[in-house]
Length: 163
Image (cartoon, rainbow, N blue to C red; front, side, top):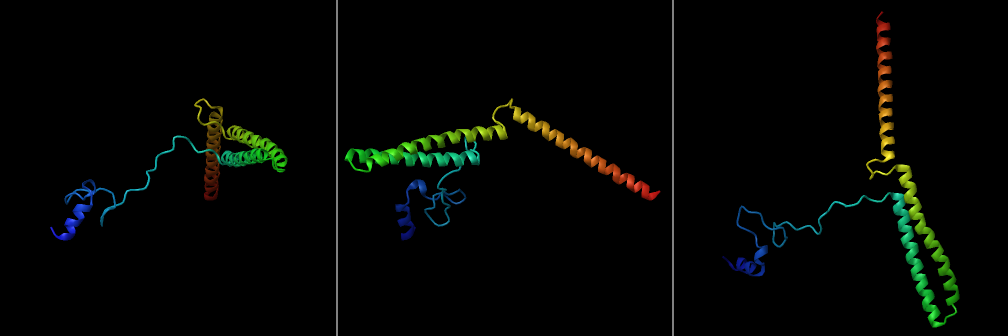
């Protein structure tokens, strides 16, 4: 064992030292040739992602609501200090409260509209799922009938050209 090996053996904790030849080294990235551990591990989502229109409305509502809260705090502090800005900020914060309430209701309405248009997938007895299945079967039957009709016309045309 030379000086460098001895120095490395002292500095590296036993749990992170490479194992004997033929065994896998721990994934810490301490030495050369040792792989690094990932910063995080992807886990599957427990809930489905919100639809884009609903997510857009929700982000808008959160931004408006947070600005309204900041504005209400400014109105309160200007009222405490007795500033001339107290009355205008109070009026604008009341208006902002109405707009924030409207934006939160917009999230709810957008979600309901999206569910009505695209169907509720989570319920097993969903009527939307049954309707989609019926439409799919009807489209498949129409395509099959069209394909069969084209084949019959094509075969009849060949027979006529031979005769």
